[in-house]
Amino acid sequence: MLFTVQVCSFNGGNRDQTKRKMIYYVRMSSYYITVLGNDRGFTMNNPWEEISLDDYENHMSLDSVKQLQTMNKIMGKQFEAYPVSTAMVLGVAGGNGLEHVSRDKYRTVYGVDINGDYLRTVSERYADLSDVLKCLKVDLIRDADQLPETQLLIANLLIEYIGYDVFQRVICKVNPEYVSCVIQINTDDKQWVSDSPYLHAFDRLDEVHHQMDENSLAIKMQEIGYKDILQTRIPLPNGKALIRMDFQKG
Image (tube, rainbow, N blue to C red; front, side, top):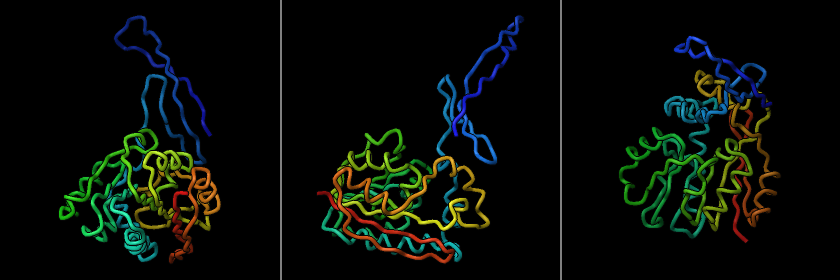
């Protein structure tokens, strides 16, 4: 729920103690209030810019979560599935799965993320792909128009954090022939991040998280001219599941 709050502060350098009013936009949840911005242009950064890669990867690779390992296998299949020579990975994080990129097949692969530290790690980890891999720091919600076109678009555990409408805009800009994405299906809407020693690293993600389901995603893709060509369900050890959905233009 979004509220506006008027806050008065005083100019300490002025004898008249002139009040300066600012309007802050805040979102309230059950436990906290998050400042989203104010009428003078201040904005909070995206939560993904604050999460360390170590915390993210350590959490995702836990035996009780096992999403890093599962996603790696899925990406191997995604990169091999279609007759393309260019691809884009949205939310590339630390580059999990990029070892499956074949130079014999791919001319260019774009790794896109909002976190510059993640992208620097990707460049270091995959220096052997420097002639193929191009890292792009892009805020998909605000700057999707900066994205180049590619034949294959991969978006794994990404749509949850930008929403269907933004994802539609991204696809229309990138204009891929194929879209391959993975969404997470949660049995518990309130506890959609799996419990782990790293859980509190993800506290702010509730600000940007959107609940996903395969039917809604298929409908949104149909709206922009993409048909569902593949759907597989991969169970996870914690009762959750990953759904891979592939689409083709036309």
